[in-house]
Amino acid sequence: MTNTYILVPGSAPTGGLMPIAAQFGGTTTLVVIGDRSQAEAAAESGADRVVWFPTGSDEPAEAFASAVARLVASEPGPVLAGRDPASRVLLGAAAAALGAPVIVGAREVNAVADGYRVTAEVFGGIALRTTEVDGPVALLVDGGATVDGCPPAPVIEQPVVGLPIAQLSLQVDKGAVAHLGSAARVVAVGRGLRSQDDLSLVKELATALGAELGCTRPLAEGLDWLGRDRYIGISGQQIAPELYLALGISGQLQHIAGARRADVIVAVNTDEKAPIVAEADYLLVGDLYDVVPALTSAMGATP
Amino acid sequence: MIVAVAYKWAGDAQDAVVRTDGTVDFTRAKAVVSDYDAVAIAVGRKAADALGAELVGICVGGPDAATPMATKSALSRGLDRVVVSAEPGLGGSGPTRTALALADLVKGLGDVAVVFAGDSSIDLGAKMVPAVLGGALGWPTLTDVAGIEVVGAQTRVVRTLGAGVQELKVALPAVLAVATDAAALKAPGMKDVMAAARKPVAKIEVTELGPEGDIVTTAPLDGPARRGIKIDCSDPVSAANQLIESLRADGVLTPAGGRR
Image (cartoon, rainbow over all chains, first blue to last red; front, side, top):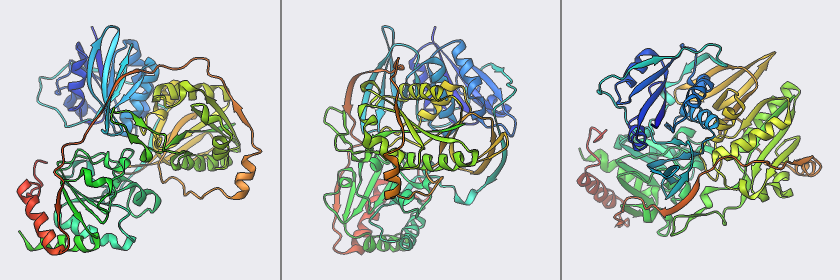
């Protein structure tokens, strides 16, 4: 019988992973790399068993990659993990140990003659691709929400010694962290903004809307106007807010793939032919320098 | 001692087009050594100089990855030499096949202390190759690395996480994927380009291609249907009021932030 592994560094959510794991049939094993409370919380997410690698306070999950790979290789099966950096490192180690192809953005799995047929989103959801794999497979899946409240599964503790990585210090920088992934509203700005000083215009609107501030890649990486944790796109943040306001953003594939799952998209752009037009629920063809202050005061004026 | 940098010769996904059958057309995307990889080379150069090591670029890809234009482009970023495996079966291949071919190149180099890689490839952007490479070599692997410092036998790695800045000690050899802002980039000068033409390039044949799924179907995936309602902007104030009214009617401006 197939046993599917879900790799869970710390308190990484498994809500998106459990339904995909279920499509393989058989049993599901959560491999938790974290403290006791994280292992116990994971045990209530509906899996059949939990294998727990206890971590010390100075031991990052990545330090356990080899141990996780050995566990998975000892009884091979499909492996799933979320999109956070530690999950990727663990999934990569497991894929190498199994000789399994990695498929990113998996949405559906079907068993076929000697393997699986996996349908996945490519480029952050601009196309679907169905791939047939004739052995174990490693899937990167959106983590989704945290699952709890299921009857607790047995937890098998597996201590590891002699880790190759140890944390020496951690400086927490709370003020600077962007929470784009969980924001209900996001106001994003692109090259339509002429200077860094003008960001204040956009920030005022974001505050008035109770929104997080985002941007396109050039603003975060070429110009350095905003932190790289704020850029939205295929290789940046992929978000699904209720409201997405795209200001001075042309809407290139690289960017829009990161925002396509928004419920409502508003575009403010001077170019009526920009790709963003096809992606917008509301389109304001105009200069963001006129429209943004008007929106800010309109939000301020009405309760 | 060798410091290696894994880089890719690839087109930017920004210039790719999705065809109506769901396949992705990269023909308009000109291949480059991406800024992600250039940052990895810059960080690698600093580490190699500190260690007194040679800086070797490793690359796997389709046949164009071994063209003089490709290798010179990488070498002009500061590599001492390049080792490349280029053949059709490696062009556009997935993370596992790519990483296993890179692992073979690393093993062939011998005394490698660190393999650096960029944050992401610009064509696929899966951010999985460094992880599979580290797994294949059995070496510790970290991503989002801002810099490294080597003091005797110990390596200190600084990385930027969502929560802040973390300093770690890592046993070498290791695979380190660097953060996009780990080094400032400057375009290669004429001297760098001239020097690149004289640096060694070795082509290594791949004996066995790693596992890869077979694509059976593709389909375009439209985003949610959009309404495309145009709001006249000749008067920005009334346009703003009209938009906010509409968004309230859609229920996306509720004070508590709605469903979250």
